[in-house]
View 1 (cartoon, rainbow, N blue to C red):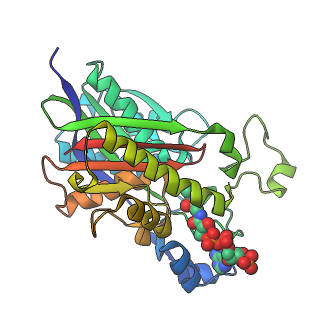
View 2: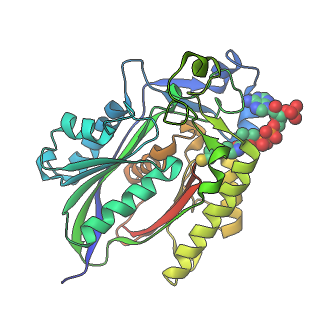
View 3: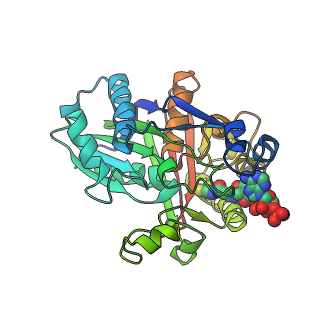
Amino acid sequence: MADIKARIIGTGSYLPERILTNFDLEQMVDTNNEWISARTGINERHIAADSEQTSDLAVNAARKAMDMAGVVPEEIDMVVLATITGDFPWPSTACLVQDKIGATNASAWDVSAACSGFVYALASAAKFIETGTCKRALVIGAEVLSRIIDWEDRNTCILFGDGAGAVVLEGQEGENGVLSTHLHADGSQWELLYQPGFGSRYPASVSGIEERLPFLKMAGNEVFKMAVRSMYDVAQETLKFNNLDVTQIAKLFPHQANRRILDGVSKRLKLSEGQMYVNVDRCGNTSGASIPLALDEANHKGLLNPGDLILLDAFGGGFTWGAALLRW
Ligand code: COA
């Protein structure tokens, strides 16, 4: 059988219209622009309208990716959607997207790997394509984190934003496409970054709402250190696996968590100026959406050239982390 690779043939993204700046946050919690900007590198983030759900953001990004790819919805075999803020606990948001875009021939499921979700989703879809089980997959990262943020907690509410990004993957013979994927998890650390309610451990209750269980909880310092270490380690693992030196990477797309985390990874990997793509200043942390959003931005700016080696590098709750190396 010919060697089939999963190649990205279209990208798309969507950011809700409303922008929440650090100055807006000054009016909401005890914080200030200088602190947020210095500690996180974030200046503003987008917030979904009340009428917008995660599936709506996903659909907007997906349609743009399909347009760029020149693919109609019926040609999609699989919709894989990374999210931790689905429209409902179930059914999957991927099913809602499959319906809304009319991808009537596609299977559909969500991937839950928090901020590493897109890399996990891409790795899964790529395997289906490489085995010939599927020809074209829509891989999406979409989040409306603003609905699970505790807007009274200044430690977390300053970090996150809403958005979506999508790619169309197609099986093609040749040298271009996903070259390798590397996924990891450490479930012993789940309590450092999670949403307690409401699931089977803490089912829905009035007291649970009073205890603010439906909101994201995070131990910022521990997460910070683990993020830098894990993103560095998995990037090195990927380079070693492919016998590459970091200088051969045209662009590295990290999960956009925090500017200081990205600077830490960049310094350890000895990246050169501009080698890492960063948009956290404008988008904040959009969890599973952050990498495809950044990828689409860079694509539209003409920063990605055929043959370029592109490294995706993510870390998130679980803990989960992972990387994917692509030849564009
Ligand atoms: N505005 C002003 N002060 C704030 C604040 C805010 N929004 N949030 C916290 N502070 C205060 C703290 O209360 C603390 O005050 P104290 O010294 O009087 O107790 C002080 O600032 C320092 O807090 P600390 O938590 O040590 O700051 P930090 O340098 O670790 O930065 C984070 C906090 C959250 C920005 C940082 O830990 C971080 O980015 N962590 C990773 C988060 C992340 O990326 N999560 C997702 C990963 S996928």
